[in-house]
Every structure is written in C-alpha cells, then in structure tokens.
Length: 495
Image (cartoon, rainbow, N blue to C red):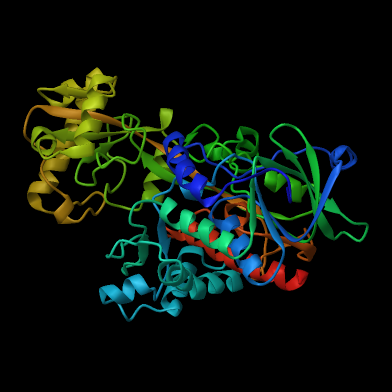
C-alpha cells in the first residue's frame, strides 16, 4: 500500500466522525526520537513532493492545496481518526468582508479596517506583514469554505473581540463542519491521508535543507518519507506540562481541554534543527463550567461573578481574554456566578440539565441568602453578600460605576433562594511556536528560511498572536489560512 499506514475511505470516515466527536480525544502531534537512530531503523522508504504532518484544519487545508497544485502529497496523522483541535472547537472564523457578512447586509467592512483592529490589539509587537496578510486573507478563507466547499455557516455573523463590527462566521454545528468538508475536498484533490503514523524527526541534509521525515506507525514500524517540501501542522502543546512550564509559566497550573495529541513534539522537531521560537507567554483561554464539562450557557454575562475572596473582579460581559487572565491567577483558578431563582426559572434544555448536574455534584449551592449559599462552597458569605448588595444598588441605578457593564446586562439579583455556581477557566490553545514569514516558511534564529520547511496552524501561532487573543475565531482562521497558503507555497517549491 502506498505510504503504508492506514487510509480511511469516505464511507468509513463518516462512521469515524461520530466516534471521534464522542471521545473528543483529538490531536495531530508527533512523537520525537533521535534522528540517527530512527533513520537507521527505517526499512521502508517512500518519495513524495510534499509531506504534511498533522491532520487538523491547518494540515488538511495544506495537503489539499498542495495536491491541487499538482504535488504528490501525503498527510500523516498520528491518531487513527480525523484529528486536530479544530475538530472539537465551536467553529468560529474571524474575518472581514466575508460572504457571511455580505449576505447579512454588512457590506462596508474591509480588510483595511481589520488590519487597523489587529494593530490596535498587537501594536508593533508582531510582524506587520503577517498581520496585514491575515487581515486581507481571512475573509477569503471564509468565502472559500462557504462557497467552494459548501461548509454550512450560521446566517448571522457574531460580534467578537473589542471591535464594533460583527466578523465571526460560525459553523452551523461545530468546527467539524469545516474539517470534514476540507478532508473530503483534500481527498478529491488527490492527497493521500494516512492515519496511525507519527512523525518523529525531520531529515536534514548537510546544507541544512529539509528533505523528508522519519515517522513511526502506531505498531512501532519506522518509515522514511522523502520529500521536496515538509509542512509541520501539528498543533500546540497545552498538554505538555514541561513545555507550558517553560514557555508559558503563568499558566502551568490551569487545566486544558485541547485535543489529547497537543503535546508539542511537532514543534520540538523543528527546534531541534535550529528553527526559531516566537511566543510571548500567552495562551488561548476560555471560561469553563466544570459541572457541564464545557462552555455552558450558565456562564451568563447577566449574572454576578465573584472571585474566591467574594469580591467582584471584572465586567461579566467584558472580553473573555481579560476575564480568563484574571481568573487564571486566582486560587484554584475558580470564580463563582451568583444567580437568583428568577434566573434559574428561565433555564431550559441543556443549561437546565447542566444546572441539575451542578447541584447534584455539589459544585453549585443554594441558600435562602446568598451568604448561606456561598458558605456552603467555602466562601466568605459576608463578603459575597456585601458584593451582591453593591451590585444590586448599581443595577437599580442603571449604571455600573465599578466595571462599566452595560445597563441591558446589569439586572438586579434579588429573588430568593439564591445560588452560587462554581466556574473555572481552561486553556484552549498555546500562543507560541515556529516563527514564519508570509510564505509560511519556517525561519531559523537568524531570520532565514530553513529550506523546504513550512508550517501552518497553532504550531506557528506566535507569529500572528501576541499574548492577547484578538477575537474569537482568529485562531481557527489562522489555521485554515496558513494551511491554504503553506500548501500552495510548498507545492510551488516542489513541483
């Protein structure tokens, strides 16, 4: 069989898709071993124009684009199914002048205005050319997915980040909508997609150029893949505690909900041959409901949120990034949402079930007063009561003089019984990795491209994202956009 490993047919893929979503154990990262040992051990060898490591949105886009350009292309994914954190995300793509905006009547948003927004968020901290590239191509990627690949999107673009323009195009169901469509399209272009094979090391010639990959199957067989271009699209490293402690020490103690394969070996392969690392100590964080084991609607911006000391700490309707960074420094990385009975009475469907689970597990507490409920969770009841009293006074006055919460979200919480809900934060991606240019060539520590080595997605996210996440959907669009163009450029160099 060409390329060895396991090939998944379209029919089998349809079945595996459901299984992969159920287990939610996604990742496209690769084990690491000394090149000399692995190279000598490899008894089989295959020749390709382009080898792609990692089967998430970035890698699949890269493989498809490389094959579309006429390159003999293979993608290697270490898991036995379609993987990558892009398979378990909500599926938001942030971009300007997209077909989703235009169809909704937003016709005056431009790449220029998006670039201005990126520069306001990142200033001169990052490569201007990369920021400009993203501003001008993110909308194109949304159009490519929606119009060329028929990915289903929600009709209404969502407002994310601190700008005033709704730019996030959200997949109809989840990120799997986009990933499954790109997978199907990549196969149609002629790309080979092999599962159960993990890259171990890059093959480097005496002149420093990359000429292939040593990989290993999930039963331990070493295989050599010779290639004219290699694209590393192996995701982040949030599940590698050693690397998080090294590169992002402020977040070493928080939990993570990324794919189980996000362990960083793909990044290490490049660093081992002199690739430059760029990162600024930040992670992509989300607010998390432990009772729901997910991003529950119980994390309601109309509730009152307090820190472990019982005091309010942020505008509950503010930027997720700002809230996440504060909670990440709290003891136990927990915060607490205060509800009253009126809020609970409005719950239905999934949030209502999440609430029931939280009460049953003792993660939520009820009391005739908020102080009573808070004390059941080990909080200072008097402090929480004082915070709620002050909050209600501002709500009655219609002005949040503490954190500037808008009046429509500033509602009195007065109807007993009261509830205190334990909430938390979790990391959802690492902002750091290979430094790349706008051709998505991996640069060495002198800023010079390493011949024949390209990268896409989270493994090179530090080039685009500083320590602050610009807006929800930027990371996913970075993955697919960098995948598209790394694939095209790698093929152009190889064919």
